[in-house]
Image 1 (tube, one colour):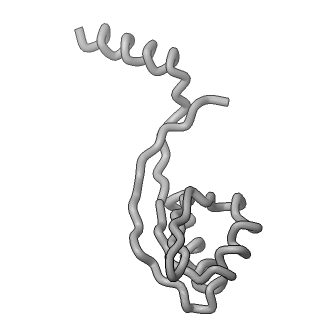
Image 2: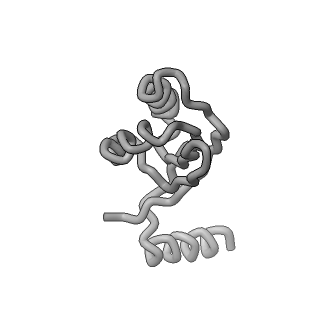
Length: 99
């Protein structure tokens, strides 16, 4: 019975095109407007800009591989000259379709 269920699950995953699961870090970070302009121009390397909220500062939401979280945070600190602020960091498990 267990073999039948596992083969059914395998078929379902193959049909869905799931290539695997990986851990991402989603970082919410506050910065000034000029820094946000620079960030927009360089995003897409080892992090992606998901969204932004505009107020007194710009609160951005970035995603990166969990393994690169420290590197991304160090980059943001350097980019903002230490004036930015981490608002929240979450870990998320995402599935990656086969390519």
